[in-house]
Amino acid sequence: MTPPAPGSPSLADRLEGRLIVSCQAPPGDPMRHTDTLVRMALAARSGGAAAVRVNDPEVVAATVAAVDLPVIGLWKDGDSGVFITPTVRHALALVEAGAAVVAADATARPRPDGSTFAELVEAVHTAGAQVMADVSTLGEGRAAAGRGADFVGTTLSGYVPGSPLQEAPDLALVTGLAGALGTPVIAEGRIATPEQAARALAAGAHSVVVGTAITAPTALTRLFVDALRS
Image (cartoon, rainbow, N blue to C red; front, side, top):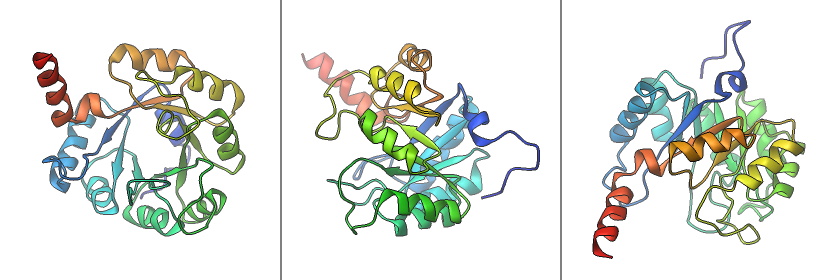
């Protein structure tokens, strides 16, 4: 991870009003291969993305080496509870791999090792990187910003008990967070069209993450297949 040159725009400035592409694939998907995911990130860069969001230290390191974009790194470990960068150990491995920003679950749920989100933020900042807090509610976003998160994302809205289940992006949460926080708000989750991405910015988002609608051919193929069967 190369620090910015003196006088250069901050990362927040570079991301303002821009698209971040989530270059991930679920376990068992044919796209889940480091070289494939790096090429996905290169394609996102060619298309004009301002940053990429990448899972797993190995993929983060390979992406940092090949793609001239800021990398938001996360480490999914498990499939229930807090599993997006669940511990300080996971977070520091991502910094070591070169992530400019570490994305981590910042919901109110307990972390598997008993640590706190504030401890993760402190460790990442000490190591020289920034933190994106993945939240599901306005209260969680307020708490994450108060604990030092550099960005707050709506990533987990609709996926955590207590947050509203919906098929569309949670633009109400985007608006609420943007109005309540001085911390940049990143809209993420169920953004399926360019029009929805633009509405997220209009709702107050600092920047927008899009994943499945751009980088998930298996899931997109399934949508078409299901539509033809109905």
